[in-house]
Length: 337
Image (cartoon, rainbow, N blue to C red; front, side, top):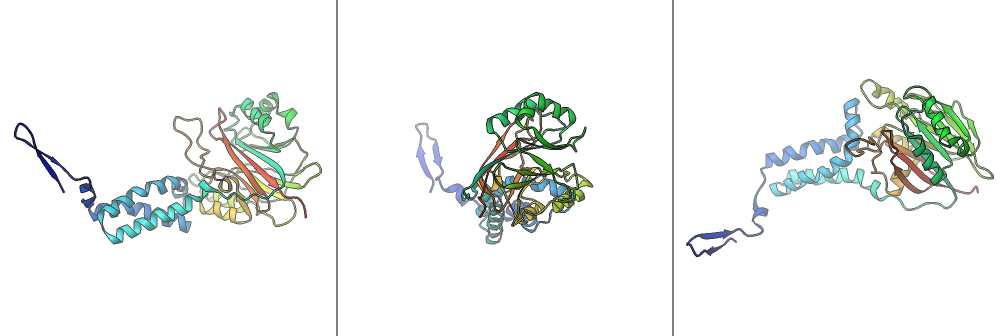
């Protein structure tokens, strides 16, 4: 209850009780207005209803929607309306369950031979070659996947020392965003016909480790879901090869132009893969857009390994000159039975 105190000049000071604000009610209409957009978002996300370019683009903001849904939840609680409160709780729970597992990951990782993958989109070849080569020197990846690789970028990377570090390569470089290339210190063999390429160049290669297993590497770069390209974006993700249950290990790495909040990306993972970021608790680390006034906002660069492969670590690095961050994943290849 409120308390009053007389002052020496005859006035009265009224001090409201601490819990008074909790007794105030938020209008039900306001609570419904706040909850409804988030509830619709949760339905779209859970049912995979992001049809068309704009819904596909905005779906990448689902982690922010999950955090934002807590405000409508608070308003619904203050409204003391059971129906809107129930919808708000269900909305926050649905969005949270879709997002939060990426922040915790799965600590299980089968023992085996380490295999490190580095992937980076070079933004029309403008990514700093020295920074990329420095990452290669420091982390000694077994394979480097590059997107938006131009002939000039290949020359700059080699001049910075990549030729000596990774002499084997399968390149489809171009003077456009379509260029891509796979580099490795281990022998590579071009792998044609593994899948139908829809989008930018997506070379595939077979890699044989000395005294070890064989892997199939795909350098992924689907088109972005912009305008009419959304159809090709969908078809490009669907065309990527599934994770095999036997034979050579398979790894997809690159710029998927999709997050795990896209139904098509989740379907791809369900076809026999694990996402390295999701598996290690780094799945909410944004990778794009980098080197801008605003920090990176969404996660569209991924390393997918087939389910037989263990995932040890996942890290993201800034590379000057490009609008993507580089992704480094350390995997574990089980010994043959």
